[in-house]
Structure formats: structure tokens, C-alpha cells
Image 1 (cartoon, helix red, strand yellow):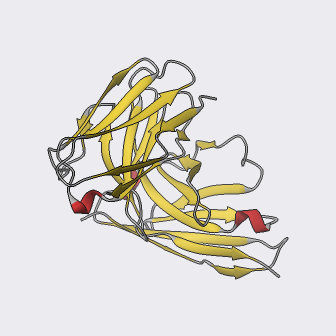
Image 2 (tube, each protein chain N blue to C red):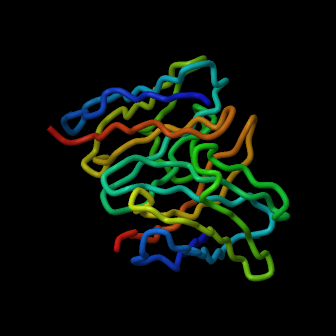
Length: 106
Length: 121
């Protein structure tokens, strides 16, 4: 199975900051990667799939990139409503979630 | 609007059996793979498994395979999760989700609000 790590585990940033969240796989996953946002007390929400493709309705300040084993979710200008935990998921050779990055306001 | 509503959770004693349901609406249920994910309190997400449109093919998390059985009733637009020999470590929120098949696998695009299962004597 593919193992997934995410960094950092906790990220503090200010409104308007550009933030980047990292997801690293134990082997090549060929862009089979999705990102989810989970706000406190809510179900996860799909943001991005296939590394770069947007789920409808997701704000354009979110973007995904990466290849091989290393993938990134970027938020171009952090908004208060972006406070959440972000999980990546690989669906290459089984499905494995990363442990998550908790994003908070500084 | 895609809607998924889980039910059947609650407090259950260790060693017992429980069956969760997920009622789907707002899309053509029998056109999609469906699956389940769980989340222990304060922890991350754990993929449980999925079932294909025809209820004939299932993929499970290898570390959980013996505990769970996923099935569906397309006539009732309902997905099920059977859990056996429950233990305290199975205490979690259980989410039903719709799967999209893409590339080498599938990911979940819509999720229910989840149902809490607490295993305790």
C-alpha cells in the first residue's frame, strides 16, 4: 500500500496570506490525488481531484499541483472561512488518506 | 442536489453486530460506486471500502476487511455497512459517500453528514 504523509501538521497563517500544504506519497501515484477540506463538526468536502481538477463551486483561490510523489494544495489569499483540517487522498493502488494539516488563523 | 443520509448508529456493546444505512437522493444511485469512510474522535479519515453499481464487486481496506461488509439495494437507493464483533476502537463517525471512478481508482465526491457509532459496555 501507498503511505501518505502531510506537512505541516499544524499551520498558522494570517488572512490574506498565501499558504501551501504538502502531501508526500511513499511511491509514485501518477497524479491520483484528491484534497478534502473538513471544518469542525462537518463532513469532508472535496476540493480538488486528479491533482489539479476543481470540484464545482470551489473558490478559485484554491489550487493543486504536483507530480510523482510530491503534491501541494495552495490557497492564494487565506480567508477566515478556510480554517479547517485538510486531508489528501491517493486513489492509486488502493485508497489512503493522509493524516491531515490543521489550518488556523494567526 | 446530491443528498446522503446515514442512519442506524448509536451505542452498542462490545462483540455485537450493527448495520448502518445510507439513503441516497438527488442523483442516479445505480450509476455510481458507493462507499464508506470512518473517523475516530479527534482522528483522521480511514477508508473502509466501496461497492460497484451492480453490487457484485467490493473493494475493502485490507486492514479492515474481516470486520465490514458493504452492500446496496438499488431499488431502495440505499447503501449498507454491516459491522461485526465491534470493539472500542471501532468507535467513530461513519460517513457514506459517492465514488467517482477515475484513472487507477476512485475517490469520494459527495459525503453524508455521518453517523456516530459508540462501542462501550
